[in-house]
Length: 262
Image (cartoon, rainbow, N blue to C red; front, top):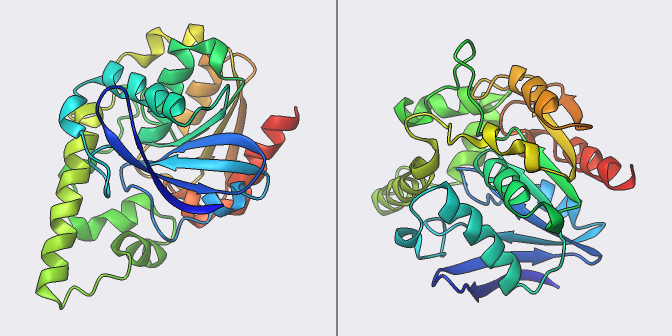
């Protein structure tokens, strides 16, 4: 089965979920850009798993973002989605903002997560290595911040929008503002919600995956995550930036599959 389905959670949010593949369940939590058509990681993971990729409220056609105010709300929303899908102990994989939420979910309910894939997750802060402020960056500068190859990034982030079409341009910026409004609840002004105080509860086997050219969250954070999570496997991927899921999907999927057979 492949395609979109809609679920309603006990909290009252309504989410679209992209479902594809067959095999053990894997829940993928997207980053601040949402679920992009160019994201080959989901298809790569679906070769071995039934992948469920829910859109956060505030992204795409999902709704109920006004019900989610803080880190705990987003964490419990993640488990509400898992429950609504009827899943038991799925593998959790999250990218950037989604990695932050996935890590929190694994800390709050450690008994429900056996495998955890964190792809350039937000959530930690080191004063000597500040995370770039994505909310203060002009749109034309985002590809260079997020991608090893800015030209590829520009095409992926716009999704083929024709900016000469005024209606398409307005729609793009409205949707982008809505996405950033939701993401800002966790990432603005800095992406630090004291996750480091709860990581001791995390019991899942974990892979931490990072693009070596990440200019948004420096790769030094990969080492920090590895220090805080006992036994975590840290994988650095060359020629890839923060959007490593788009630039090197096969390498990311391979790192996650190796985690599952460790």
